[in-house]
Amino acid sequence: MPTITANGISIYYERSGSGSPLLFCNGSGSTLATSGPIVSVFATRFDVVAHDQRGMGRTEIPPGPYTMADYATDALALVDALGWDTPEWLAAHPADQGLVEMVAEQRLGAKSDDVRRGEAAQLEARSHHDV
Image (cartoon, rainbow, N blue to C red):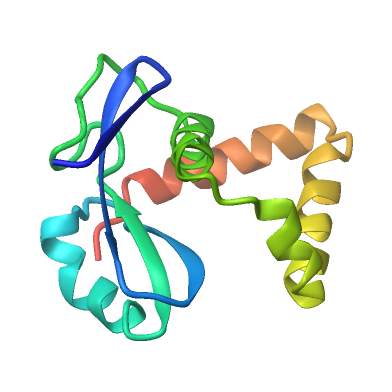
């Protein structure tokens, strides 16, 4: 069972396919067991690594609450453990590099208390949405 230990937990992952590296992150409530059909499609063209996120599937379930930063840090730890050199890949893919830079600039921008309050209210509303 392939796992890495990072951020105080054991993270289960699977790797399949060949080609350019692709990190697949499951959607909310999904695990590798339920995402297999989607991952297999990507594996026809990419070297896909997918993992069960913290609290899900075969990855450890540490005490919560969890943050999106926890999930991002876990994913980055997996990429690092695999030895994927993300800056080199981005340098060869300028459109993706531009997207990363745009997101980073948005994250670094100062936000007023009102903007943060509005964002928190939106996320709270979404956390109770049931489709």
